[in-house]
Image (tube, rainbow, N blue to C red; front, side, top):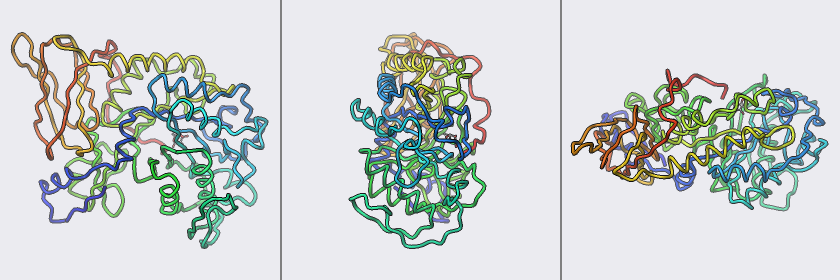
Length: 461
Ligand code: FUL
């Protein structure tokens, strides 16, 4: 939902207007998932690269024991609600046998359809399916006759270009955008419901190629009305770093001017009072935190010993889910096409810890070291600052203060508190806030040495 603001609006008018902005039902459903998995898989898995070349031989893609149901079972038991697969990464190789190019699984020794196997496992185990379709495409840039940046004219085009036996659409687009729309059409009509379409902003190509975003968004809305369009799209924004770190004050109501976010996605503040003053429009635009369980996005055997520890993952959980964002955690399958055992073990520990420490509340009287707060985001995001008090030896003591809450806020305490009761005080709010308070105990808190330093650094997205 979008709310217009006027140059004459005072800071209080702006806060009042911000308090009226609401998420769409698809954004509410997206946020309540809290945990989404990312799966980077493709030629890079076999060439040990992070960014492929576009001219990788499809023969390299040769998983010996691919089993998407192993991924899905591992993810479901760790509490993930959906999974986003790199159907096409920047190298342009497709994990499904697209009709629109030869550079796909069909030309590999594997020959199967990875996306179809994943979609089937997701259906069987009740996991949502999301798709990463890289806008940048090195194969289309480098292959003879490739479309990326070929300077072709914009012409009225029917989508899909080949007859798939379903509905047809018409857009004014150039060759690459027609190709991209045809791929979206395949992905959104042949694999069942899609929960999220992830449009990466990174661009390793050298050619200038414009993206027909309005046509892409229109086609996605027509074919997958429940799918969120993330990062390069209107429903979900990139948090601005790939370290697993949302901001202390992570607003979902974001100021825009001239159709762009007022602040850069990676700025220290994107929606504070200073940004509100520069807005001509306010939109519900929540943050997604993408981070890998390993140093790289793709599997590298050399990183088997560098899988993030349980305390690190729980720290990321508190700083993403616990800071009003969705955590998009990447787990890359290995050359067999399976999640490797260090990752499987860590995910099992992570799922058990989230259930025990965060899905379960400490009953009072009791001892806790994490405060949990939630706003019902169907009523927007309202709280600007709050304090929490504990009743210790019959007297109320302030034990924590914070800024925003949003869907969920998890606030670790410097040391455990034993109390008979707790209460939250809203110190400042944009409008009527609908909040709940809980307390938790996480034995990995405090985690020395991993408190965030300065706010997020720039990343390739
Ligand atoms: C970045 C890409 O360049 C990386 O390879 C990875 O896919 C990450 C999630 O997004 O922009």
